[in-house]
Each structure stands twice: as C-alpha cells, then as structure tokens.
Image 1 (cartoon, helix red, strand yellow):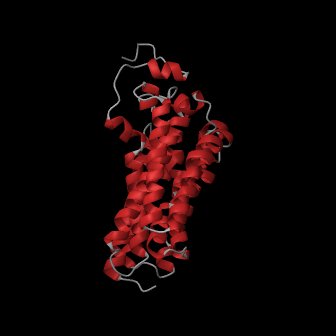
Image 2 (cartoon, helix red, strand yellow):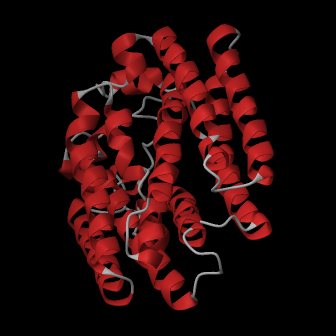
Image 3 (cartoon, rainbow, N blue to C red):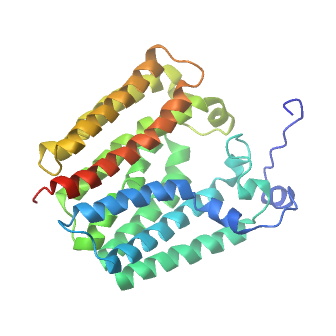
Length: 311
C-alpha cells in the first residue's frame, strides 16, 4: 500500500529488531548475490576454456569455479554488511536480510569470513597460489576498496572499482595455466568497459534512491543527462573493445557476427536512452546489458570449440 508510511531503520539495533523472521538458508544465499556470482563464474569458465585448446580437466575446473564462487560470494556478503544502512534507505534494497532484520551483522561477518577463507584454501590447495592471491585481491578490491571507500568518495566509483568485478576471466585463465596472458587481460577489458554503462543505466533509473541515500553516483553528482552521454560513449567504446578478440585472432567469425549484433543492440538502447527515453528505457537497458555480457562470453566459448583458433 503506497499510502502507508515507510520506516527506514538506521541503527544496527533497529535493523536487528525490525523483523522477527528467523533466518534461513535463502537469507544466506541472498547475501552472496547468486545471480551476479553466476554471471561472474560464466566469465571465469570461459577464461578457463579459452586458455586451452581442449576441454579443461574437471579436477581444475571444479575446484577453480567453487573457490572463485565462494570468494565472490564472500565479497558480496561484505558488501551487504557495509551497505546495510544505505540499503535500509533505498526501495530497491530495503528487503535485503540485514535491513529486514533477518540476519545480524555479526552473523553476516562470520559467514563472509568462513566462505571466503574456504574459497581461498580450495584455490590454494587444488588450483594454484597465483589464482588464490589474485582472487583475494579481487575480493579486497570489491569488498573494501570499492564498497568501503570508492562508493562513497567519487562518482567514478563504478569505473575504478569495476576492475575487481572484471577479474574472473583472468582468474579462470590463471587457474588453468598458472600465468597471466595478454588474452586474459583482453577479456578483463571487455567486462571492465561493460561495467559503467551497465551500472549507470541502473543508477539513472534509481537516481532518486541514490540521492536519498547520499551516494555520489554519477546521475546524482553530475546530472542524468551527463550520465546518459557517458553511457553512450562507453557503449561505443565497448563495441570497439568487443572487436579485439577477432582482430587479434583469438576468436573467429561466429564471435564477430554475434558480438557485433549484441553491440549494435546495446548501442541502440544507449541512443534511445540519450535522445528518446521512455520511463523504463534505463531499466530495460540495464536488464539487456546482463544478457549482452552473457551472450558475449557464450559466443566466445562456442567459437573457441567450433573454430578452434590456434594460440
């Protein structure tokens, strides 16, 4: 009922007592942002596969994905913990476990520490130390540098902090090869360039929420129109970056055709958002961007095993 007043709990005590619901496994799963982690694991899997001309052995793939997934989930849980007061003031995040009162900060911190440590141990014992340390660096970059500092300090938070979220293709590659390869860095560049237009589209849609929560997202600090221009420019840049796997011979014509279609489709959304937006254009662009990244990496995977480019 939109006529009912909305209560936004501010303190840990208020958050802890705002609901009498008992925590269940779904609450802990929510902390890990499973939909986001699944997309990251897809990019890690593609990084694994592209690093080898044959299918990746299960004894590397399984612990690699489990370790990366657990540490990604840990970073997401820390994000929930640090942002709990912000989440309590935003309609999009009001029902998350911490602001809803179904989990306490102490339990969330313990959960994040356990699954993060377990993920690191799995990578260190069954994959390699390079991947374990790079994944830990990614966790620290997202959970601490981005969430605790950048998100509140600069409207370029998504651009700078996006590097941590773009790491999974590199992590997948190093899990198999135990080395950092330029091709893996190029995969990171795709995700890194995709992140600003992806998240800024959501920020445009939820600009009032971010302003109310006092978060310096680009639409809040520089205005919605400026943000739309940045989205359009980044989308053009992403289209160029997405051509690189074909240009350098890493992928073939299947990827070229598919990625070009996806880039043009994404650019059409960005153009509409800038010059002829409707109420839901920004949110629809945000949703499409998820499918675009999914499609790009599926195309890389299919092209790799169909065309089998030689490295």
